[in-house]
Image (cartoon, rainbow, N blue to C red):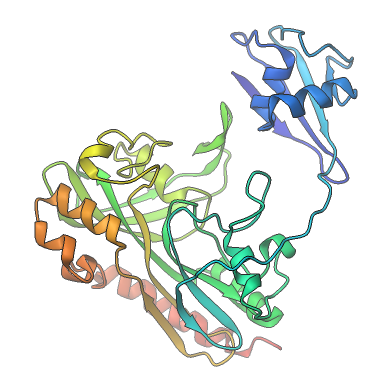
Amino acid sequence: HVSRTDVGAAPATTREFTVADDARERLDVLVARVCELSRTQAATLIANGHVLVNGKAERASYRGEPDDQVSVSIPPAPGRDILPESIPLSVAYEDEYLVVIDKAAGMVVHPAPGNWTGTLVNALMARGEPLADGGGAERAGLVHRLDKDTSGLLVVAKTERAHRILSAALAARRVTRRYAALTWGHLNSDSITVDKPIARDPRDRTRMAIVQDGRAAKTVFTRLARFDSVDLLRAHLHTGRTHQIRVHLSSVGHPVVGDDTYGGGGGRRLAGLPGKRHFLHAAWLRFRHPVSGELIDLRSALPEDLRRSLSALSGMPELASHPDPLDELGFYESTDGERATDSTHERRNDEADGEPS
């Protein structure tokens, strides 16, 4: 019910938004919703004079009028230590320069408000191995991320050089990331490309959405199998926006099975998925080693819960006990177009071999 623009930075973050015609909420409720804060946090900001309505302070009980201009100054959160925690991790590959984790669904990747413990970074710190600084202690070593309820392969750098080279390779699309997704309904063809920009949903800051002036985002989807009510797809990321695959599939009317946020949660009992889990798995990862240049080609079999769901929705009970139904259904067999893309990436990697230490 509001339009909002981020206009500030450290030491405080200033957020400005305009109250829409249909928004008559209390000021504390409005600020909490738009700025993704608790109501108590919003009320504290208002009481301390950090919230202005049309340039002046108002009470928390003030009800927004259409076209009110609201400015919220959010002081930086105090720093806090990120503590190591002994949490089991599945390691798909490791050497002195990097480690590839096969992340379980339900694990948050890095600490943030509301999730300071139990994250992948907490678990990595407990292993006693060095980690690149990356984006600071909270994102130590992370080259890319996965959503909390997305499982699969994720790269972590141990050295600054490895982090720099891998991050550059990711930005230049020299890291191949392919995901298995089960979606409701059927695509119009066996292969589609969704090239639509993504940004925060202006009406719900907890979601992403197709936004005209958002960041460029491109995903190629290849259908591997068509069942009565669902398609099994291979999703090839060309960019790495937050929730990209889920938003793109929802935008074409085929949300990911089990995705409550983007319209695919209906039929969860039929799908047999636990909790808020959605059927999205980072199953295939290919990249050049940042030091040796060796091609690293890693695969992650479908977890047990996704095998059960696929078995139930496909009508193929044998898939529940198969070591990796993705292999059975041709997930790792690239199309001609994908092979051409991979060859281009290989050439780019060869050209980048001279990256300085």
